[in-house]
Image 1 (cartoon, rainbow, N blue to C red):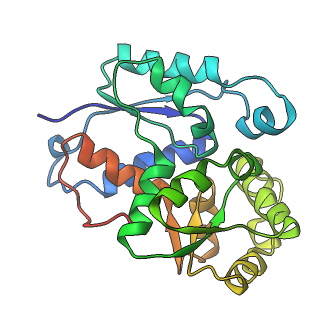
Image 2 (cartoon, rainbow, N blue to C red):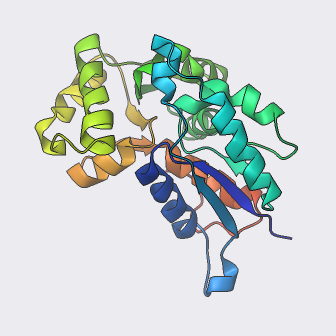
Length: 236
């Protein structure tokens, strides 16, 4: 029997839509009724996760929990969060509901291990990097994490916050290829898009070669967990 997927969204809205599109694309379906039941709460009131982790900003947990419980009350059998940084608060959110909450960094790390990738360049927010949420997941999977230099990390943050979230800077004005060269020079075999805004930016820039999408890994895992028929054999 198929299960209903609940999406704790709004972090940001474009990333939520990107995940929903990937769930549809990764479900083998010949008609509407073959697709999965998905309920999304694009809760834009959830405070910025990086600001909370690094600068003592408002705690996002109350709003995350509010969304989680709302989705369960609406009939969700399992939950997903299309925000890597939000997984710093995973334990509190998971403990607040009676249904499973999938863990995107662990799923991405497991997929990297299955693909026999030994060292990956991690492109993420400052909050994700500083929280260590990917360090732990990748270490358990036997994958070495390579992070951008401080100067290159500032460009990653510009791409996420100014290029996609705020749309105040053209994507092609940010030297993304310099970031990738920096990571490759220090041993990265592939590049993990470990922020849900980055697949949107990289797709628009035509820079998806050698990039592995954590959002896609989450979407495929959600399709499988909900009893859908996957349209792809692996998350990459």
